[in-house]
View 1 (spheres, helix red, strand yellow):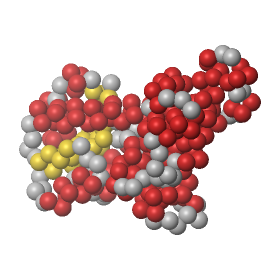
View 2 (cartoon, rainbow, N blue to C red):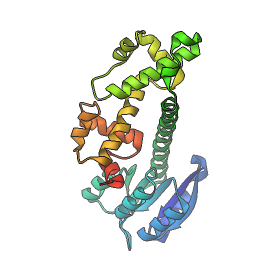
View 3 (cartoon, one colour):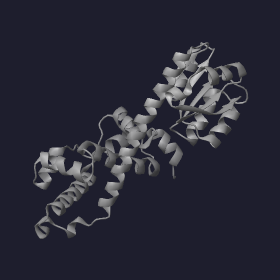
View 4 (spheres, helix red, strand yellow):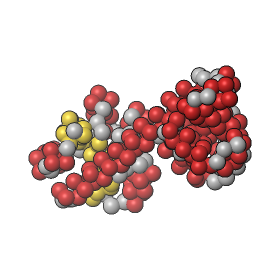
Length: 270
């Protein structure tokens, strides 16, 4: 069940949402209700919801400011905003904060259901990506712990050992050359094997494509540069091998869950 927190200072709105939306049909459960932004923030800390449905204008803490603070605590929470205010700036800022839907009051039940289902789909996709990336990182760590120079294929005779050796050599070459323009064929040529064979053993040994592996290596290097240097984002983009800063930022957020700037702001070490 997906955990829903409702936040609105109008009791009739909250009661209507609780009773009229068929939550169980969409695999959701209302875990709490808050009456203002500060209460909502406190309950998020305690209850850790998956989805928050909230008004924008509330006492003590506005909905948008509450979202900023919740994101700092639990970045994967999804938000659906309800408001009676037709001001463009609210909508634009809500989009910038990653709000799934911005619904004007009064809204109907189908709109609420549709917004929640969209939030669930986004959450599921992101969790699958995170899971895939974590698996890749564990496998990369495993190869970091192996000294591949000690098991050259000519001394081992076993196909599995040869594939592990080649995978380790490929990963090391990618780490050494990630800041250059790099493609599958270049790595395969370095190892004196076909690109098809390299693609096959990377899938078998690491469970990822060459592009996924290269991106992960580049992103890990970018993380170090972001927290240990004063380099600008576009400079880091170039240093880790990307030519397009927006593409680098999208890839970074996919792997880390934060933009490069957000990651630097949260982890700066100097």
